[in-house]
Length: 109
Length: 116
Image 1 (cartoon, helix red, strand yellow):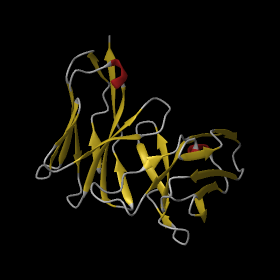
Image 2 (cartoon, one colour):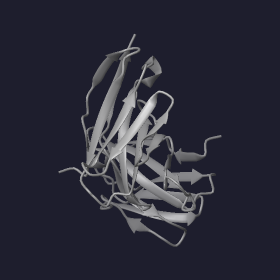
Image 3 (cartoon, helix red, strand yellow):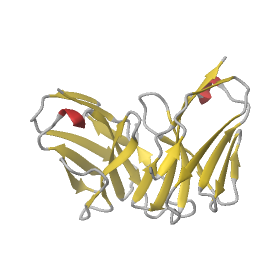
């Protein structure tokens, strides 16, 4: 079983739609959680950290469920520029980030 | 200028050749990492370093070596390249002093390596 699992997609949604991704992790000792965004042929960039109480950044909302060991990302009012691969990332400490394989999202006009 | 730079950006080499990928950062971070990315497999950690005197193996270190020449520089070597080392290689940095959310990593632009 992979340490971090994501549905690879691709997800194709119309502009303006709401889309949600889920991610599960296997190590209950995981401490920190992130969503990274990666554009085609580019480096991953931090989109947002995920806090235990859930957090929102504009159109993006992240949730963490420690009991069920899953993380979610919700994108509201999606834009064409949201097209990218979204990486779920889990840390067991500073020395190790574990990346999911990513979920590919395409927003269609 | 970019905070994390990698050279070369693209490289084609032959099986058996030695190759070095270089990473430099101006972020002042003490921690540096090397990853490779393969389609369908995500990013996997090769080596990481917490300071100049610290080198640690990651998930897939076989066939690779690293050198931390200075706080700002971390190089990755393939002593004898083989075709299954064809991948996209990323360097990343983080700051041990970061509080709060903890340990976000900042990536360089990547080196696309092809071994023929």
